[in-house]
Length: 198
Image 1 (cartoon, rainbow, N blue to C red):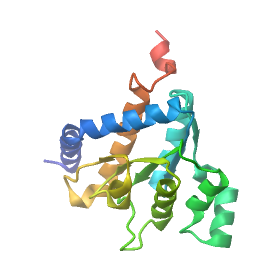
Image 2 (image 1 turned 45 degrees about the vertical axis):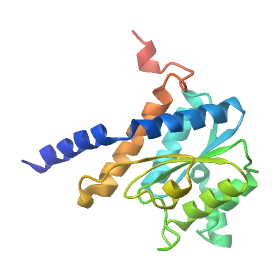
Image 3 (image 1 turned 120 degrees about the horizontal axis):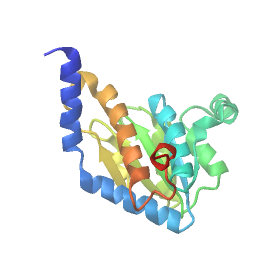
């Protein structure tokens, strides 16, 4: 089997193993957040930051959420990193936005962050802040889900079927899951352009 065939076969395997009940729990948390007038803050680093930006657009435009992505504002983010450090950059951005109990953060991360290994502490501290103020936490993560999975109200862990490709598969399925969410009948409020063009 070629690499391409193996990769696609692994992707099909992952799709069949995604925990649908975890996705359904995310739908419930997100629907409740919007119903209460809460805001959705989408966060991640690297590929997760790119996903957070794209997903913010989709949740705003398709899902009718008041949604924000801290990493979209490079000036503020880099100022916070320069002045206060990377580890607190997202949490301090959320404090500046007065995150509260009606709000929700949505984490995109391959490992979910680890306090013990000092990995993705910017996300760990954001999740900790959210829980401290009573905000909800959801996420799509890989491996064992790390800190995010341990503390989230609802979390999808992308199954590892090939350890050498955990980042590629996790980031691919993060996009699958968030597009599933904004297309879900309980969350979608506006028809998408190509679906409305017959």
